[in-house]
Image (cartoon, rainbow, N blue to C red; front, side):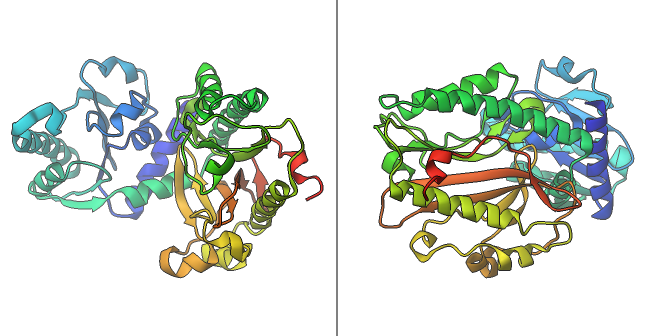
Length: 391
């Protein structure tokens, strides 16, 4: 893991240099972990600015840790100093929030001046508006750190890919448990908990969403697990969205059949169409292919499924869903942006197929790696032959 941490910190600093940034203040818990390897209350930290890291371009890396937790990252070679954080939030400061924000800005500014000079360019990706304003008043140029950090995260090292594969194998075992547990009479929540328990037992961190639905709740997509009871012969659709082993995302989607009978012709058609979309689009991605070219060549969604298409055709993935977002052809002009696929990008290729008129839907997704030869699947969980046969 030392090699992983060293590579990631160097990636951040390289992108800082390319973008003229002297210091980055990172509050996003995933970015803090990416840059330093330190992990502490990641979900809590998603909404509380109670721990953050200062990465200077040529000086130290200083972790500002949650009160009483300074010992947790003491052994990490990526961190030069650990200090207690100043929590600039209304919950922590009450009506004195403006004073707390100025205190935070003043102390942070003093450290930045010491290591980066009085006119440093400082990147921030997530902080209270009042705190950002107070820091800008200290005389720094404040810029958005999202671009350099996302670009840093986009290219994985060979050691990172070992972590990705480990996380995927653990999640696949969890999904096998879930698949084996499917039976009419269970609620969606009971079934979803089977995967969650197995993920945590194997050292995964948490599941970022609750995307498991059954029957007509599979259409439209994005309905979270509920108390609905799974009925005989329904489809059950799942998107893993697991922040798993070593903090790496395991992101693949599968749709199952609850039985006891064989799937219907309509269910098989939905599944076959989603399967075709994923594999057609996987075949387009290779080093040097532009995002625009990918969009232009991507699979044509049949008209009856177009209105409820998944909002993305593919997306980057690493420690969470990441840059880049790849859009369908019809959405590219409004939402898309260009770029180029590079070796060691990890990409999830998506499909959701559901008719606007109703009925069930199918969600499939493959977690993949861009290699010198093209795209290869990293997710090894099998597709459902009973839903493909005869389609």
